[in-house]
Image (cartoon, rainbow, N blue to C red):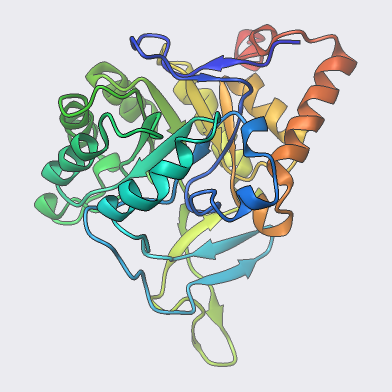
Length: 309
């Protein structure tokens, strides 16, 4: 059985994973703590917390709340900043064999370019994941990922600042994800992650106040999986770069569903809050399913739901 994946087949450095199971940004910290208890090198890749130019303390608490079949979070990109990440975290990644992909986010095109340039050539950093679900302060707060023109501009900025392969993480907060996927692919993205959390809200009826301190947050978990599967299906139908599926993956069968929709790899996020071993368990379950079904490579089933039309 060959479960290896190349997430940047058109890039000179490529981005090869031994298997398709990745951790999702924001749910795994930077892998340092959990790496003391689990074999990170057995996974396909880890994705860092969202990284910004300056350190961020994040939003006030409470900033997470459980909901039916999921959770809402509004962490606010709490992180140590890119310089501290390079000084203290990247040297640890450099000792691992698992690829470490740094999720970056900026509020202006310039910030995206600065982050990409700062991380270029840093030992331990294998690639980037560009989060475009961020408000563009130069466009009145509209998320970069909600407009094809702005999304493509971010990609061109990053591509011009780094030699690293990079994924672009799309937002589901659009009427149709296909124009955005096409725009970032044309602009030079090597792969896309589909997709981020969905804007949501929960209210404490006793206190008569929002349960998240700043009102709103992003919904993740099994509740969003059918939406994410659809977005992977749609995105993979219009681009020829790899698609990484993300959203509510809890089991190996969930991973199979995303691959059948067109994903080359998958990210495990919220599941790790329930079960810290979830990425490894999901990988085992995926391998067991492949053996039971006589599948020797994910290429045999990738996008098969679309081909069945």
